[in-house]
Amino acid sequence: MNNKFILIDDDDLIHQVWKLAAEDDGVELHTYDSVKSFLSEEEVDESAVICLDSNLKNETGEIEAEKIYNKGFKQIYLVTAKHETEILSNKYITEIKGKKPLWRTL
Image 1: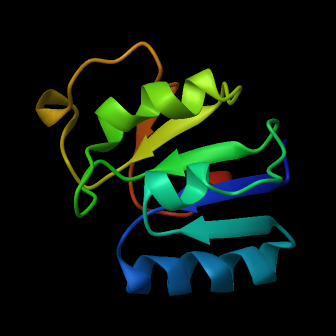
Image 2: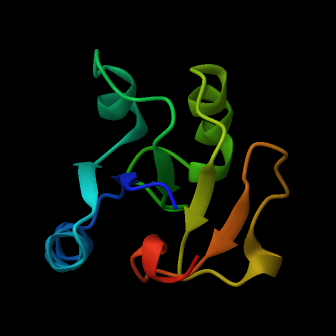
């Protein structure tokens, strides 16, 4: 299993929960509050697993996934509380998951 994860979510509580879980599980986790802030990062390992929320302040995860994919990231999971029927179908999304830390659900 990949040990590098990137969480893109605008909810500070989700960041805190995932960071605590990452510490407990020995997982490398980097967090961002927007796709824009993530894409402005200079050095990010393209093998990292992207955990992308659907509802971001000024962005929609399903739409922004293409930008992340085009930067070389191929493991992009939508982590959302939305039901799958509410999600825009997207070839750039690997799978839709809930809000639990992803490495615990793979």
